[in-house]
Image 1: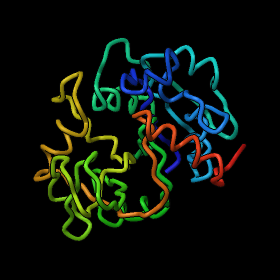
Image 2: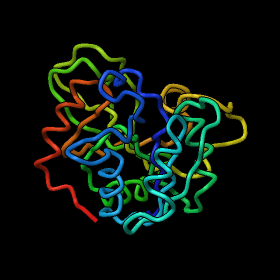
Image 3: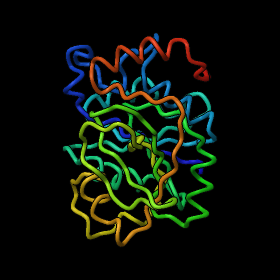
Length: 234
């Protein structure tokens, strides 16, 4: 697993009160752009090439990272119109060549073992392997139901005393994005939820540090917590 896609094309509407016109993935967290922290994490995990799936704020991101940053080769897949997470992935994966490609959300930091994710993906011969985070007493996220390593269903968000959630990190077979898919679609709702019976979707539960900066409260928490965490620097 040497190639990764980072989904960083969203408008970040819920974070606009603190981000202003700055792309969500580029907001300052602990003195540097959040996307920089993600790229350092990927590089430390063995990734050597990253495709940034951009949209809103493409120029800001491209001007900052260019085509080579630290140990990573950087390429771009730019949305000219909103494609949803599925459409953005399907477009970006054309810029990759590995049989399986890592995909991560550009507004989430989840400290998981990428080697363990890859090992499960290969052992299960999965089409998609998801990194799952265990949580207690939450209502912001839906939950994922497992039977062994196999994902069997998704439960809509509701007050939940204990469960595992989608951590926003996937290992994907390149060939799952077939020609019968629409140009714009949600990977989570239109692909994952509808294809559990026909595709092999697996999940790896990891209890590493997790933060989603998509709302102001959690953005402020990330600013405090990531300042003191040992995130690798180039």
